[in-house]
Figure 1 (spheres, rainbow, N blue to C red):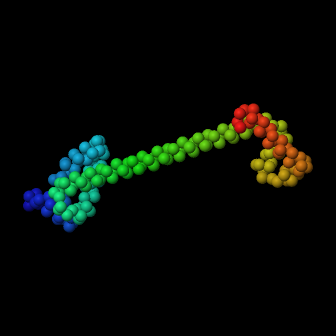
Figure 2 (spheres, one colour):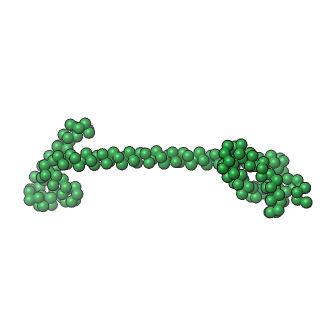
Figure 3 (tube, rainbow, N blue to C red):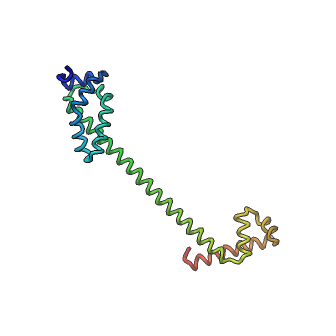
Length: 181
């Protein structure tokens, strides 16, 4: 008996929770839904996914079917809306991935720049006399004050201050020669 029922009557019954009516509707319209999904998506996997999405959402949507249009017309609209939603989500994901890609490229460039600076600094520091390198090491890596570094080095705090001033001048000169600044 269900097979002779109109689509509209089946939709009303399925909207009320009748699973058998929904099964008949799904079977009756599956090929139409799939063909439209294929035409809209252009690929078999996308059409299959879109058809599945539509059929999964259809029981909930049937409750809102008001019989103002033929059921098949209404169903085509559901498929089209689902295809448009799917495209919008894909575009949003694509933009997000592109944004992430730009972030990653920027991060890697900054990382490479930092590595280049570290390499330059290590090479420039190697060109300094040992007493200047030792002073810098104690003040930067050892987290010592100038007075504490002076004590460790066995020199006056004024000598430590002069050495740091000399380090800055020499590094600036190396950078100017190499075109780093």
